[in-house]
Image (cartoon, rainbow, N blue to C red):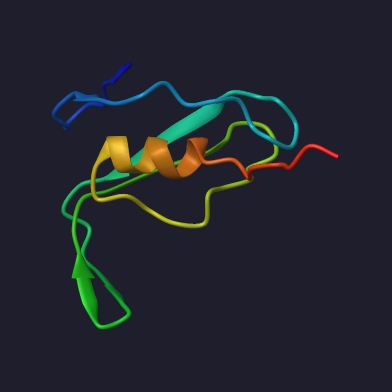
Length: 81
């Protein structure tokens, strides 16, 4: 899937799965040249997904769109009873 935003280079990544809580589509977000002080690390260019309806998130940002998609698409493995 390719995401495009004005002022950003188009990025390609895996298609995000629906929200695991409400089933709504995921919303793609990115920040360009946003320098944030976090855990003694300067981070620039962040990508993340959250739910477009209930705003649930993966709890982290990715350095690439693909990393953000993998974090969002991660689901717990349920053992069969």
